[in-house]
Length: 548
Image 1 (spheres, rainbow, N blue to C red):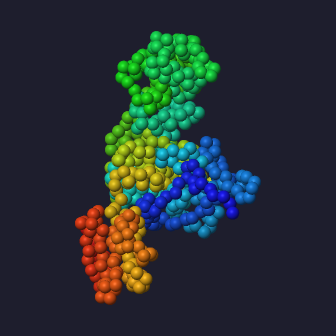
Image 2: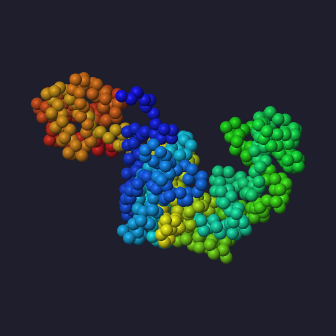
Image 3: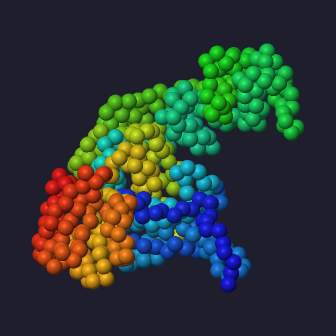
């Protein structure tokens, strides 16, 4: 016999106990019902895919997170755990095209695996809830996906949410309008995506740093950190910049040190005067380095392919366009007129807005936000993500978009497609914090515990449980009749079971059942007696009276 082992699970994995699982099932059931109301059909795909199916679809950084799977003692590369639900969908469409009439509307709710660094709210195994439409370029499909998102959140009880909508075509047009070289556009998009987090000035700093070499940034951050920690006198910043760092790290070129010292000294003195949060030291010193963009650009001169200052200013002007959704689109169309890709993207969004109105989605539920960026590698048209502002600002809880080229990577013809994915973990966290789960969502599925008094009463207790179950009331029977009635009631209370059915010899002889509604204290509890024939209907009526 093998020795005992310590009970544990791998880092980043977790067990979900019944009380939390019941909440998950509630959320998943709401999502599933909405998916099916809109005509989406269920699909299941294999948890294990061929490695060749997954590679080349996500980018190098993401592919490092794919779990390999093998059997036997020799590690192999043939199989992998699925990384998401989108690539398996593309494989299915390619394999079964003749069995799936187009457009094909599918949903899938299933776990995926990523070898990411575990942290609070981030796991290596988690559920995705996806809905996608394959086989149409109609913007009605895109609008319907947004409508599904809004409907799910409304059904769950969310009121403070916004579905942000943009288009990859509009982003491409903005890059063309600004005159940003293709090689720098990824940096441009990453910077403008941070508008909500760092503000217009923060975006300006980042845009001015796009294309600027990062060789000396760590050394600048090191000296900035030492200065605001009062380990380097502000007057000695120039010498500290040029000096080698710990472990032989290279110092800053003396010519650059001379250029940036005055401004860095002023920034450090300002931080020392205003104070700072030690937990934000890394971000603070990075921002200080970003403030040195003019000096860094002057130092490198024409040797770097940076975004011109006038282009940055044009970009900032675009980012500040605001108003109603139709006003934002009209203003952007006017500014980007003559850029075909931008005009096409804007007209797509205008068409989506019309369909959203027809679908009954209020304008306050979504916002045209062309500073929102996602899926640069595979999205080809409209993109969308959802954020909530209560209980606190959180990362996006849904995300999706149009991917018209992804399925063709399996050798098939291009299949236009659009879809979205719900982040169920974040949704549950938010609902927990806001107390949004309905009162009927309890820590257990049982609504009644039937007690047992003795070996002679077991059959009567079981018969009463059968009656309750036949009447649609989830019922559990206590197994051990040797336990005192008080212990059985205590068990029900500890489980959160709201009702206890008491069937002693007297009740069974009279054909009656005593039902006790458990309160917070004994004085809060209430009892009623029913005949066996009236038991299910009587208890249902009592429960409904309590819930209303």
